[in-house]
Amino acid sequence: DAKEEIWDDWERFEELASDTREAAEALHTAVEAGDEDEYAIRFRDLGQSCQACHDDFRRE
Image (cartoon, rainbow, N blue to C red; front, side):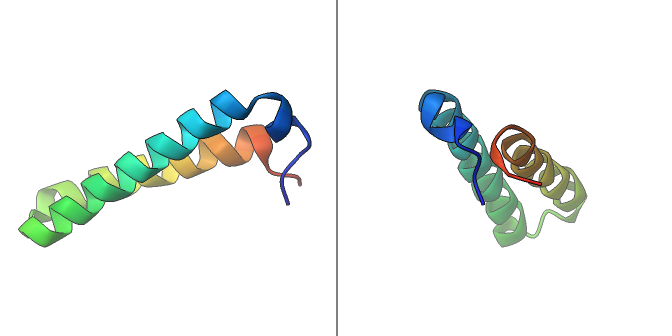
């Protein structure tokens, strides 16, 4: 369901995808370490990175 703009701004899409990958890895690291204080922070960061990409490139 991507907008056509994704092809016009591929570098931005790759940047956002990288941010999401990093956020997911940080959440995974916190879970693996059992660092419960970090769960909500890392989950929020992941959600925000997903939303950033959806705001720019996902159709309504």
